[in-house]
Image 1 (cartoon, rainbow, N blue to C red):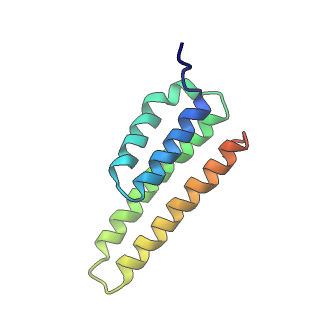
Image 2 (spheres, helix red, strand yellow):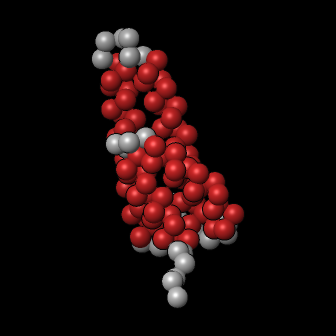
Length: 106
């Protein structure tokens, strides 16, 4: 009989999808859908904080991406903002994954 994914496994899978999403945005959307569909099943556990962290990472990253796109016409500014947002999202993924593997909330 196959074991079902634990909430921790699910959060790890979402972090992996987010890492892939840094290179192909579609995976970020899949991660967001998983977060919203499975959030009720992790309520009350330490994994709930990770789901909130992952959702916030997506939405704030999207805001940064929009700002970056809106400032692309200013030489270098849009590219700089994009790079900063990309690194910030990477930082949040790594920080969250590190806490999750350690069994801690974020």
